[in-house]
Image (tube, rainbow, N blue to C red; front, side, top):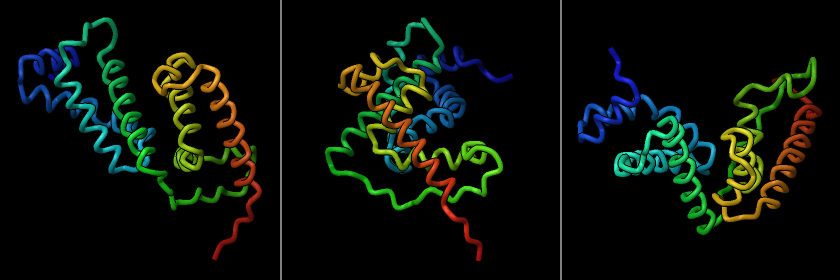
Length: 184
C-alpha cells in the first residue's frame, strides 16, 4: 500500500531516505511543471526543482499542517523558480530561438485549434514579466496583491502586466490564425 503524503512527510522528518524518495516521486513531476513555467530553460527548471526539494527537506519543521502539503511545496517551487528567474534577468535576457508552431487551418475560432503545446509555445513568446504574471495569476491562482509581493511590484503593475499579456497573446493568436500554411 502506498504511503500518504502525510506519512511521507513524517518519514522525511525522521530522516528516512525512502520517504524522501517517495515524496520526490510523488511530487517531482508536478513541481517540475511549476518550475518550467517560470524558468527560462529546462536546465534552469531542473536546477530550480533540485533547490525546491532541498528547501522542502530542510524546512519541513516550518510546515504546520494548516493546508495541503502539496500547496506548501508548490509555493516553495514558485518562489525558488522566481528567484532563479531574477538571477537570470540580472545576467541578461534569454533569447528563445524556437518559434511558435503553425496552427492548422481553423475550422472554428483560432483558439479551438490550439494544442497544449501550442499554448505553451505562444506563452513562451511573451516577455518574461508578462509571462510570469500571467502564470502566477491564471495558472497558480495568486491574487494581484500576492503577485506584487512575490515579484516586488505594485498590485497595479501586476494588473497592467496581466492585461498586456492577455492582449499580446490575443494578437499573436490572431497572427497565427492568419499565417498561410504551406506544406512541402
